[in-house]
Length: 287
Image 1: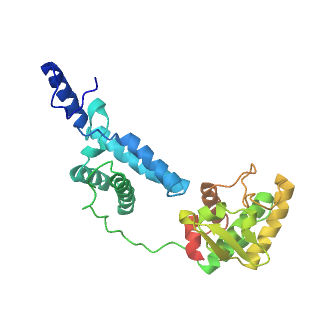
Image 2 (image 1 turned 90 degrees about the vertical axis):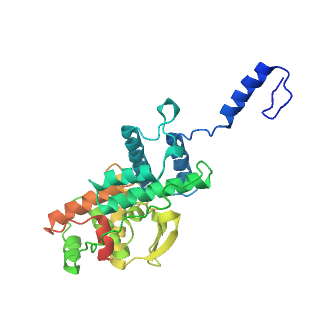
Image 3 (image 1 turned 60 degrees about the vertical axis):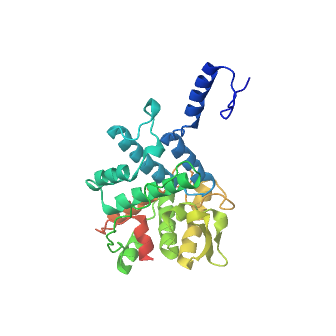
């Protein structure tokens, strides 16, 4: 016999007592294990929001740090010592932000707070929690330093200072020329395939944030540097410069990474004696 929680005509008193107890526990709100919810959120960002791998990695890193804070302080622990998202309130979040401000810059705290805000908005929207504990918490006011960039003389010194000794030098020259000519993001630069570059029209197609596509003009000097580089690609890596093959390759013939580009920019700045420490993003401001 299947007993209903609303059955008022149970024949045995003991059955009523046991069944009422069972119904009571079933009616209690189920814990929302934080680790599982973070994984669901990661799937949402990857599959529905189409965020870049870099953005996804940063979001998950920030959420993992918040998770470790709760574990270390033994906050919001449910049954089995698991973290229950429903127990997180504004006081817990403020304690976390206070701990961050002791050792982090405002920009870092703001980014971590933005990751938390996005996560808890998702939990409310998917009915995992009833109330957003960050609703009344505002991001810290950011300092706005001027972006670093190279002067015109510096950029000409950088581009003209690359001594061509091997195919990788040809690649670096082409990469920096394209970077300076187009002003694309470093992630867009490394994502270029040969089919994205139209040598006749002098344009290139890039895939930016949120998988948004845009057309960017590219100068003749950069196009000629790409032509010279394509010859080396065929000779060194024996790859056709067409279709979805990546434009900029690493030493092993795979698509170069953003971190490698940052190292190469730093290397060539040192080689020509430019004392400015600048990231690849700084070259965008130079554009």
